[in-house]
Image (cartoon, rainbow, N blue to C red; front, side, top):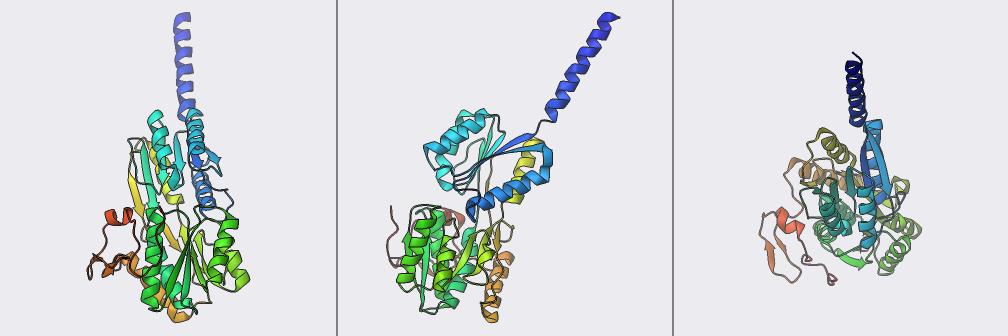
Length: 356
């Protein structure tokens, strides 16, 4: 009888331990390239992570490391997260790609999700948004709203995502205004408000009156506000600068993806995938068109959004030539995802060189 009681007690203890283990929260890590309050890219990832946390409540434990430089520091942070028992890590900058693959190889039981890259492994997924769709809309607005026929683009790093953004913006600005010219300034950083402000001023000094930024802070809009010029929200709505200089925005909507992928870890169904969604899928949002924009121009921009969602319009549709005049896309031909993912050239009409 005594032995039977001991066995029952032991079984109850094992069951209780198993129940406690089953209730342990999923530990979710985020590595941010900028501060979580940068007003743009990193803040929007952070806010999306918080929405994911709110969705799951005490079923998840959130771990966030902000302002992590790309390179060795990022690998160190990822490694520390993996050693601390994180179940899934979201690494949210292109320059984290190789580090994510390296650390993923050392911790095969940890799931990794890398934003905007192209490499995968059995425990590493990648995800990105079709930002070029939003930049087509912003380019159209820039072409229609410029009074000097000079628009500017602040570029971060010469990677395909940024080159696609430049090309898409220019193509649609040129369609909207055949006299438009685009000046590109490369600053080789994602987040540096001082450099972003200086780049904006340099463009203003060149006669530019509408600026598109492919960086993470609100510094360009602050500088444009001083100058009475126009610009766009980047990654976040940046609505505090509306109705001008911010006349619309590209908004990154990451929260649904984060919820979906963490749920997959909980369900045991997570697998390595490559995700590239756009406006139709809700991963790219378009900010409200400011009242500064004439009604007919707002209607044109909305029609483009509607066409992209319906699948009747693709921002990279021929005829289009490369910068040197060689044919790229024939009349009506649409660029495939492979060509877009590896884009390393300017389209015809953009001056200057892409830096190495």
